[in-house]
Length: 347
Image (tube, rainbow, N blue to C red):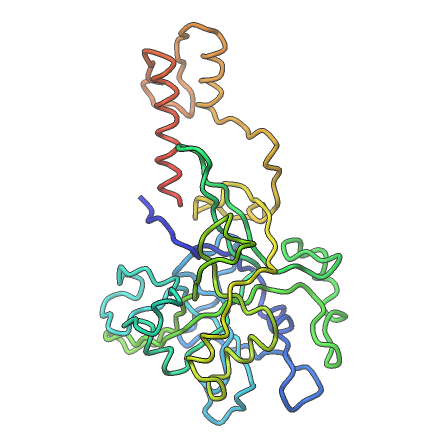
């Protein structure tokens, strides 16, 4: 059974390095022109795992101050590099993904006291986690109902969709310039911490990160009580990254729950981490009747006839055939319980 993921545990993260470097354009404090963020390969040769169903342990794009890699760099210079989602505890001695601690999120309320997070925070290892958007599940109104997933993201420029690349990919050259910066789709920028783990077995180095979470804003709380710390503006990003100018306490105090995000409901296919594809980010109509599964159709037909019918073997039934229930109540409860169990296993 899959472990229940806590907020934030899924994102859509598919943008290529060339797009991200343009999308993370910034203006240095002493310059009138815009600069693209620099791309650096990961320390262990890992590449990003582009996916519309991005999960912890995947490698995704993270932006940091270049001074972390080059002490002589300008504090304003920025680097994009792949890191693994989920900080590896520095004391861990086994395989990097088998420390058995949930580290995809770090709660802002405990960050200064946490054994895991206070050290990277004090070392200035602040980062910006990039993605198109993150998923969150709204609890059902009734017991036994299915959680409805939503994807949450920044509002986009008119005529452009973060999840429909055909609206902007053919215009990359015209969407960026030194004079005007980036005019294309805006990826989500979340505040995070990163750390550096050294394997005791082969001395290999792995950079990994966690996303900072906090109580939700009133605009978002109806979906979930927690949300990532969103860096809404260029000033927010600059202050979070520049650890030489903005101390940790001040940087944390600047983080706030965002109220400018937008969202739409998506298919419950995203509940299963094994499901992939662009359809996962597409909006769905919650008022449209859901398609019945094979077992759902059988139950509907059985109930509509008003009398028991013999169950026939099918591809979705066990080899010995569908077990016949002694009453309508038994059949309904059996189907509902199974659905709840599947929902808990995939969320």
